[in-house]
Length: 489
Image (cartoon, rainbow, N blue to C red; front, side, top):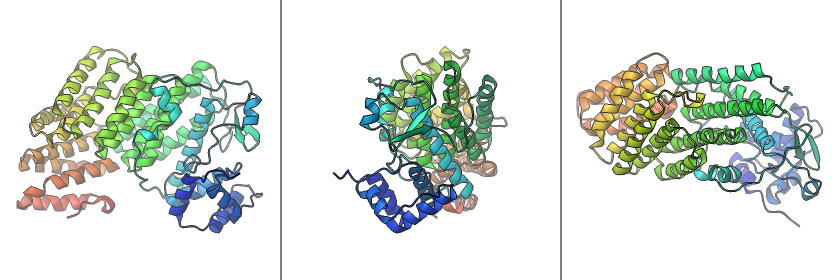
């Protein structure tokens, strides 16, 4: 009896422009290059994959992911192709064989980072498809975050196993890295802090590949057994690096890739049993949607992030989540909700100002608190002009606290955002001063987000174009922004 068509594979296949015969030849050619000389894919097999939902045996799904990734210029995983095997056949289940949740997460992590690294090497990375909202979060992760009951596969002794057709084999990366020791895990934890400081300074474009490579290595380590505490720390390293990889991807405009990394981060935090870390990762998805003006969807994700973070989250984590939710409310013009959320954020922040914070919350300091309030009120000012004054007050404090090296990207974003506030408030002289300050520094970063903000600010000065100095400034902005992201005249 025929199975259902594989609509995911069919949709991506349609985008390539290939014939079924071409795809078959590409699979055989790429498989041979990977040392899999035995592949003999033909047109009829491709048809069965697409029209009958047949799932080919390993390594064909990995080969397909590679050829689709190259063709479409963005990371295409086995799951994207609808070829992931989420459950073992009934016969295997009857014998008690299961694939534990951690093993599945490690497999996704290794597969996705491997494809992303390949795309980096070939220099084909381009923007991805339209962002998903809450539907980007897999059902099992959504259930865990929302507090619903979830069943987990039991751990089994022996090596990690994954299912391939009717057989099993150890889950390994391109090369099999051994289990990590304490010193290696500590070094990986330190590496996250180094990568994060680079990102804050120069933007995501320069070090993204290094972070993904490190994350890929962690994925390989996670396929081995470790003592419980060491395993928990490794999963937290994976979560931290995945959030950073996602933020760097978002920073350079790889939006669908970024969203996938944020979801992977939440899954890794789940394996570590760290609910607040998972909630923060989901909040990154919300911030990404807010960058694109999708406030209602971001609010849905923030509700999930809050529930997922759990009642035991620290006050500073609550403060951070409040600022993101306030940003979502600001996009919808809800002044009362914004004021309440930001007021609570300030109260939460001072409650544990001297308490040690987890490494992933240490960047949410006083400067970041004011910076988020500044961004929120700037967004609200488009609906409520009275918010502009509050935006300026928080901007001045954020910029004062960030006036040091290592915060170049934030400094540029602050100048651009403050210029937007002044354009909205009808103060063209002050707006021009902030814009020129941003233009002097924008070459120091590789942040597409900065250029996006600059382009949006450009549109706000339309009504002052009759002023000669503003017309000249607009020409300078167009010259400063890369052609692909340049605003229309």
